[in-house]
Amino acid sequence: MMNQTDIQNLLYLISAIGFIVGIKRLSHPKTARSGNFLASLGMLVAIIATLTSGANFDWQLIALGVGIGSILGIIFAVRVEMTQMPQMVAIFNGLGGAASAFVASSEYFSGSDSSFIIMSISVLIGTLTFSGSFIAFGKLQGFISGRAITFTGQQAINALIFGSMLALLSAYNFNLLPSDTIFYTITVLALMLGIGLTVPIGGADMPVVISLLNSYSGIAAAATGFLLGNNALIISGSLVGASGLILTNIMCKGMNRSLANVIFGAVGSETSSAGSTQQEMNIKSYSTTEAAMILDAAEKIIIVPGYGLAVAQAQHVAREVADTLEAQGKKVLYAIHPVAGRMPGHMNVLLAEANVSYDVLKDLDEINPEFEDCDVALILGANDVVNPAARHDQSSPIYGMPILNVDKSRTVIINKRSMNPGFAGVQNELFGYDNSIMVFGDAKDMLNDLLKEIKEL
Image 1 (spheres, rainbow, N blue to C red):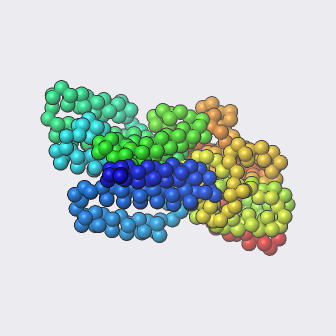
Image 2 (image 1 turned 120 degrees about the vertical axis):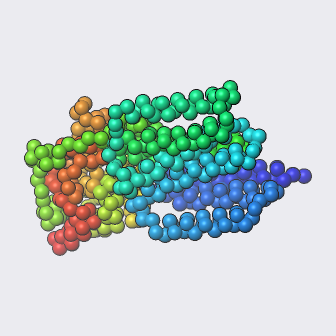
Image 3 (image 1 turned 90 degrees about the vertical axis):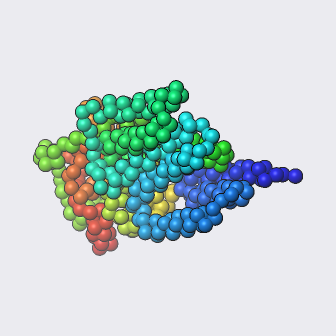
């Protein structure tokens, strides 16, 4: 006969299988929804297993927590726009880290005989994740400048804070300071370090930051799992931590930069003058009528979505334009750069919401050969990921980053609201190329006008 502990561990195993299969299915847009459902179901099984473990729970507090969490979850699901998903993910990462820190703190304040070092590490990682994630949220939401914020001695201060936390943990082993002093000081220093590590990271690196903070939240959960002896937390935290690190590595490769350069490089701290750059380059501004005539004569069109598309919430009208062009017998594809937008998979999420077929969404390696016989590349708000300077300008902060080869198309139509540089803080030399034309304006408004013009031709 299985005892209660055996049944609980069996349920945890079932939940772990749900997590693993769910993450696997999240790797492709066609299976992502079912993957999300399986992972959620796995978490439900883990919660049920924990609540039926026979522990002495305060059911009123549990019911209150479930109620508040459910209400907030429903509100977020209904009210948060798809364009705000990066901010949402940043908040979730922060709350996940905070939850781990609170659980570890409760163990400390309850006088548990668990390892003080493990409790402190769990609080350290969770608190760092919390403060860092909310700085990332502020940058994404515009509460804080999206540029890299730096000052003299910044990295030295971060190193000093980290070293101080290690020294405090060593002081505990030698009974040099009271445990309360060590615990509270580590908590405060972790809050400061989370802010200090995230503030100098510019908007161009937000996809990497979000995946890295996601990994931190998983590591914090795993540490808390070891603290409590909870297998579900250990497994789920390890999965999130590992998958987050793998995704972080993929994002870094997508920019041809090391993780250290992302964290400490402060890319995007300076911007070039938009006005002077516009005078130096031969910028050709066209109307939507002229752009529609170019598209009318084209046979093959590649749409390149970027953050400008997300800000304008123009994914639906972009699909309408593509559908209209396809109805006229033209071939239309979408070029997806791995770090386009503000979080991993940002463009895929937006276009999936607009019911764009997965078959026409092409990643970097798959789409780049297509540009050589492409009549028109239509760029909607993308900047750094299409900048040819990444190939040859060794002084550029994006030098070496794999880009979409849009400049090899016969004509490049670029939609931007202004000549402001991208998140990397550099102007795009593509704007002055002979085969490039600019159509200024909000992406949604421009595409609506373009759609009318195409239908009238």
